Picture 1 (cartoon, rainbow, N blue to C red):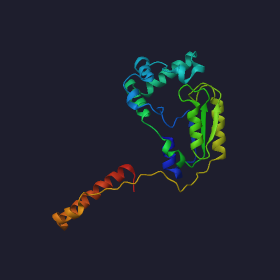
Picture 2: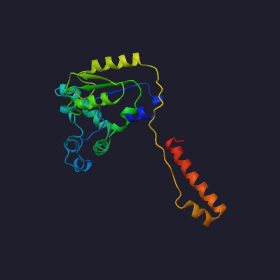
Picture 3: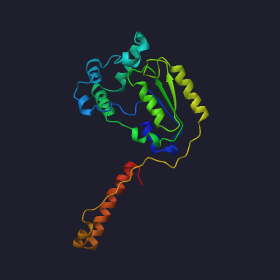
Picture 4: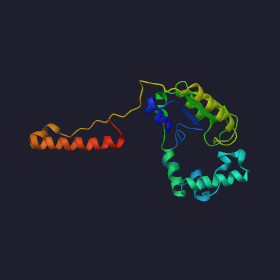
Length: 220
């Protein structure tokens, strides 16, 4: 979401910080259908372990024996979503692929990634840094995927460094946007058949429907 926002609204984005991120959840060659049928290990974990410190071995291996953290993590998950919502969000993430928008990001970008990340491999962070113009990659010597475990001090230091050096909003002529063209089928023939008044009413109904959608999606 943050990468898409930065590409779409460069005038509203002063900097971008990515921690343990991936431009695409599923590896190339693996289809959404293959992993969404209930056989994926993460879906199995959600189904069988939701309510506890789920996947702590993958996300924060350095804290796996810390009982206080395990209790906090379990409470965090329970407070965040229900089991069914967690499964839906995971499936939704599998459909995401922001690789086409990376070159449109123009703000100062910091990519932080654990070298031994068990959730998103270091290659994901390196790919982001290579494809986002002028992005800076900091590789964290840890296995922890989450930013609040081992490596947290380095993350805070690098974030402060970025925000201190690059605090001004940058401007760019490159913006990610969508252009929608609508057409009334057989309009010439239809206008002749309807007459000027009915055709004018139809056009106004069309324009009214378009304006309503523009208001909803903040379009122009």
